[in-house]
Structure formats: structure tokens, C-alpha cells
Length: 290
Ligand SMILES: *[C@@H]1O[C@H](CO)[C@@H](O)[C@H](O)[C@H]1NC(C)=O
Image 1 (tube, rainbow, N blue to C red):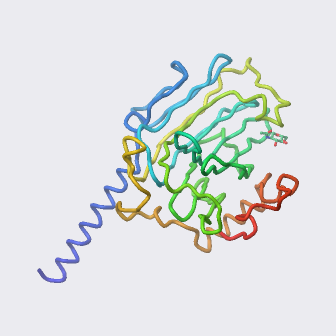
Image 2: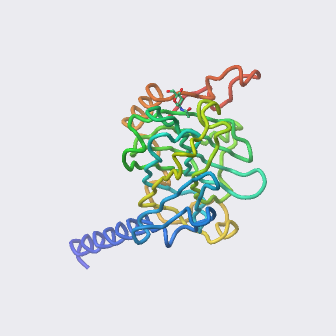
Image 3: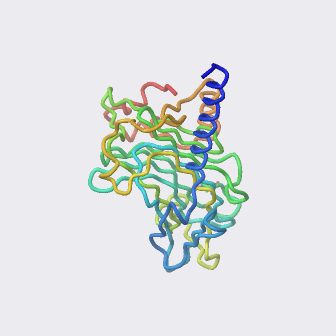
């Protein structure tokens, strides 16, 4: 076979594998998730391209991925409940099961009309969290769909909003900081009432005359090797195909963007909450390396 046709064949293979990667990433709620609670308040719409969750004074609602993943990239478009959403919490997170669980959280804390939502992020490893960072968004998350992503690879966790990195949590296990690398996680999303703490420290309660509250999810995208059960994921070794998220980090422009978000839009950072850590700030906070 001549070089030219070899090149063509390689190009064709590349196109096929890119097309496959694209199919894997374009998920479908019918195929990929189970509605887990809410007694009819969660609805899959538009042939599986969308899902809506609602909350009233009797119940919230939620769904989770059918599969577990050990590492992956998880994307979803979300449009949060508009107007007076005080007391409500809308979530998109990853969590393992069982004791000393791991978790990677995106939570959106509602607010009174005209007041901004708070984006709450946290990472739990081996059952221990205490790594909260909170942000305000640079847009109204209830006015339109925006994309929220979690990249979780053996090197780092990246929280992204519209592909702009908001937070990076590096694997610093070598310095004794626990990092989730062995417990497969599921995607879990919910809309629920947390008016005992969510809004302005619990001072602003949910106004049930505005119920039902509705949050919309669209275009769920999952890139990672699906395992039907946590045990089926096996060990944490990357043996699956080469995909960008597996080594995804930040280039110079990513570092600039995360700095911009952290300087202009971060409203709470556990790393600077000295009274909370009388023994000294956590190890991973001592170096601010993206
Ligand atoms: C709600 O708005 C108030 C006033 O702007 C702000 O202090 C608070 O952080 C906002 N978010 C939540 C979840 O309370």
C-alpha cells in the first residue's frame, strides 16, 4: 500500500473515531439516566434531549446516571428556576456510594427575585469535604441554558461554565491530600428545598406561593467508560481509548480564565478562611498552581 492511500486510510480511521467520540458524548436522557425520585415531578422531554425537574411544597425531584464512571467528562446544559428561587438548590454532581464516599459538587443556591444565584463547589475524597469555593455567575443562569462541565481525570478535577474553567482541584495525593481515584461515581441531579441554610444563610425561606419551581436540563454529555455497577469499573488504570479529557489541564489561556473567574467572581474560598483552619490552611491551598 502506497503512502498516499495509507494516509487516506488513517484519515478515514481518524474521522470514524472522531465520529464515535462525538456519538458517545451526545447523550440521551432516556438512555443514560433514571429518574430516581419526585413522583412525576421529573420529566424527560423532547425525545430524551431534555429533562425538567420541579419542586413544590410536597417534594423535589431528581435523576441519576444509569452507569458509574471511573473518571470522565460530564457536561450538561442547565436553565435554573427564574424569579424568586430563594430556598431552592439545583444540583449537578458526581458521587460514589458507600462509606467514606467521594463527591464532586456543583450546586446552585437560589435567591430572592433580582438577587444572584450562588454557585457552590466542593470536592469530597474518602468522606472528607471542607473544600468549598463559591462563585457568582457573570450571567443570569435562569434566563437561558448554559453549559456546566466536570472534568475528572487522574491528574485533576476541573469545574467549567460555558467551557470557562472556574476551579481546578489538582491531584496532590503525593503531598497527602486525598484525591478521588478509586471509587466510581454516578452523575446525580436534583432540585430540592434547603431553605434551612441555602439562601442568605437560611434567613430567606422558600415562597411556596411561587411553586412549582422548575429547572431544565438539556444535552447531557458523558465521555468516559460506562460501568453497569461500581464494581464493574475495576481499577483506576486508564486502559480505555485516548480522549482529550483524560489528560485535560489548563493551557495559558485556561490559566488566565480561571484567574479571571477567581478574582472577579469568587465569593467564598475555604483556602482563605483562616478562622476555620486554626491548625493552618490546608496543604493544597499553600500553592496556587493551576
Ligand atoms: C443572594 O443575594 C444576596 C444579596 O445580593 C447575597 O448576599 C447572597 O450571597 C445571594 N445568594 C444566596 C444563595 O444567598
